[in-house]
Length: 337
Image 1 (spheres, rainbow, N blue to C red):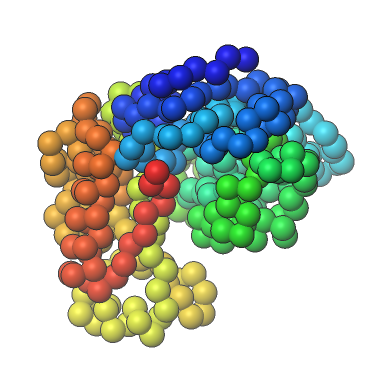
Image 2 (cartoon, rainbow, N blue to C red):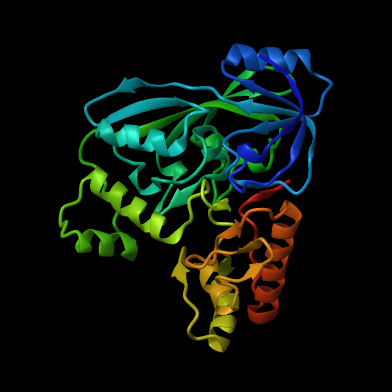
């Protein structure tokens, strides 16, 4: 283990933003992590996973601890289900593909989401009709201050739409070290409810899709809409889809009858933020090296040398325009640092 000073984080965030860490260390075992926390108790700490859900707007005046714990294993199984544990530093997409190769069902709709396994419960990531909470069993974490290990159950995590206890009540108090998922071994619940997936399967003349077929369809859709962070800096969807009370939405919908929406409960509807941004004329726009992707209005991109502050200004411009136009506030899904 080596602590490095004034360390560039350009290759440790998917936006490719140039920012420096005052001090930086990568940990590969729980013993190393515990030792670093113990030996640097008085230092400010910044926990870094895959760097896929953050926008760096400044240098990090703290000790950046990069969680690089690796490994995955089956910890329990019965005839119908298997419980798989993945260490926090495993790449999410590679882990999803591994589960599919074992014919374990439940994660296939979340193929190709950038980032590492350890951060998935924090955001309750989701795509194409599924979320982490659907297959999440538990996660193990270490208290940053007391160094005690704690297990969080699904109930403990208080999952919501892109929400969890880790973004609220215990924010910055724990480091997730591993996550356990409960997956199906047979009678897989294939979810093709999203039109894009159905269209992709029909295009390939697949009538009874396997887990791999669904994963391949999702990968094809995401690749057609979303830029590869290795080629064009981005963090996937920058904004959450706003959820509105039906009573409020009906007033807005009366004024904008073409507005798309999805019912999420008897009292709430979800409006696609991408549709709002596109209608406001931002899709494909560029402001210097910061911009909005040409194929997906939800994705803000770094064309090469944009600063985090420049991308943040673009996001604020979008938020203000959407509110002024539709009376709807859209929240950032990405963590602004």
